[in-house]
Length: 370
Length: 94
Image (cartoon, rainbow over all chains, first blue to last red; front, side, top):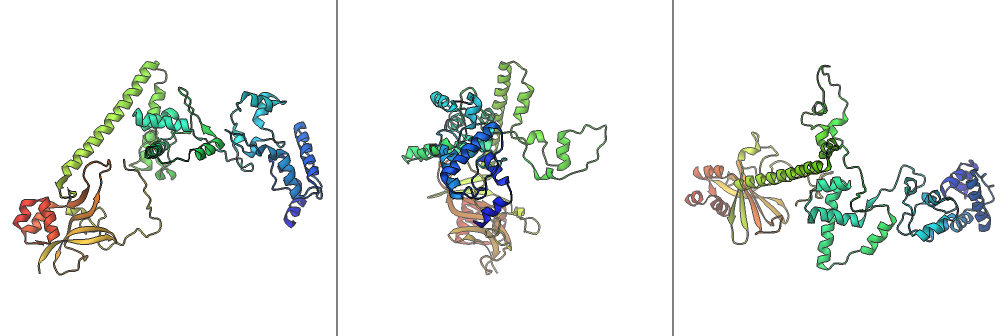
């Protein structure tokens, strides 16, 4: 008990912190649970009046009594947690009432109203703090089941591009790709008759904030057009240029590195810039332009794929064998370079140790072949 | 001493991988050769879309192989099989 007593002796700060965020851990010392629950009632009353309660005397509360008091008082809200909502400490007042109910429906009888509605008001940003003392950490939304299904349908069934789906739902392209792959696995499992842990997934999703899918009213999920920080751009450069010269963002990119693309080309969704420029056009014209861009992108991709396949065909000769076919690729022995040690050369290299046991070698797959 | 075209086994345990090399016949299998003509990966691979037959990858500088055969290099049996698949007429003559 030495440590908590010491903590209390240091001053009232631990108790005032308790009044603000229902934390038990920083409190100490007393006698009975009835006394402590009385203390909580008093605490609530003073909080409503806007006063700060004086910290109790050292002997008044014991840790056990405080815990019991908390369980009977503010903590009782967590005995029956809300379904379909987050249940973070910060969403509740010191007396155990939901903050967002009070703010919306007035002070009195709000809980009854809410249950008769059957609908809880959505969480405010302050309600999404799982750790009351870490005010910087807010629980981020995850994709709801319906939204994930819709993303899969758009990409796989309708054949929309990942880029356009990402822009429409404001979900990053990486996440769209991941959703499509996971959904595909899920559907394959269902086809094979494997059981899915649906109740578990449902239970977890119920406890987290989710981005819902509302047809024709997409809810933004996250920022999708952030410029990725390139290591070349983290240095500070003093680049002399004449005043009369037009120094654009493309020039700035080149100043960092000759191969670095300008910021406008490095963002994930450059087409959103075009769309923003066209925002005042009539809707039909805008849609036409968007479709045109999409069509061109698909054509480009097809052309590139075709080209790659043709190149491969030119280089590779297929010889049928009994069990397998043999694919001969013509190479040049000169690729090893003049001293015969170039890493670009073909074949296992001589005089170089394997690096697969070396520290820091990435062995898990870093990309997905499709 | 005879110059041979033969395979040199690299790779790992249970995961063979061969260099197709031009080398002096009496040197050690994995010693540094005169030239690396290509590689042979004996592990059959499936196409990514899962369609078609399985295949084995062989990389080979055919022109250079022809040159070495032309100046009298002797292919080992597996090397001969491989070269005759890549360029039948030349290797049968050799």
